Image (cartoon, rainbow, N blue to C red):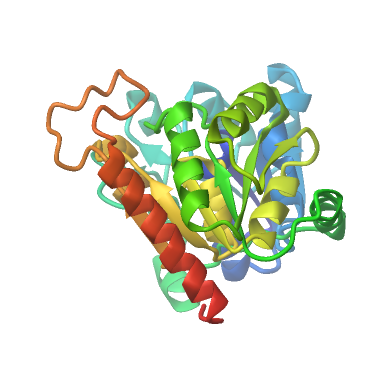
Length: 346
């Protein structure tokens, strides 16, 4: 059949969205003449709107459920692909009346929705989330997928985002090497405590006085960020509390030499920008590096604090096992990454 319009849905968090970029890219590479329509949450719009191969974006938050169902039906798509499935996404897939409906087969309802579904038990965490997504795209035409396959993870930053960051650097007179630390995450994985980030920064600065440290966060976490700086009690530590476009965070990550963060959206932004990364991840299978690690960037050092602790309490949002040796491990990893950057090695 001739494919004229393809709808791809990814309606969850920032990191999940970034790990879906390779799938958007492959859809367009396989079917360059087809219109690619992407369904996303409003907070992810800034990332998707700059992807040159996406033709149309629907922010699902802008519509009531009935309005969105009507809109999806109006498109008369030939293909509907759900990279993430829940009951409402399944309802949208059925409303599309697409001849080909692809999605992960796991819950009973998905078997009645997706006529070219793929059996996926993602909770087993046997591969990266981005690879699970690509398996769904492959289902469209395995031979064409194999022929055209290319892993593309790039995100695109606009001049306005770079200018906002340059203004921040100029206002604070920041010069020389810089690391960016994104300490606050949404709770989808374990992290170290705020006071542990403060101590890490303080001890890093004792050893590396000329390296700037920029803490990034959403404006809603500004108070936590200021408290962290106060506890770090070191010169050359700055806070960038973003109340503007999401890609301002991407621009500041791109402007700095090395990135440090836990399993969260900005970490995947750093990966999409091919930065040197020091990352803090849990050992728990559903939160692990295997499933949620950075895709397409091999310049990542992972610290897994609970690696040797089979009794780790996963109800606790912070690691039971993080200690001073692990802190030193992170500091040394940052120093190695900075020296590589200084030497001009990519």
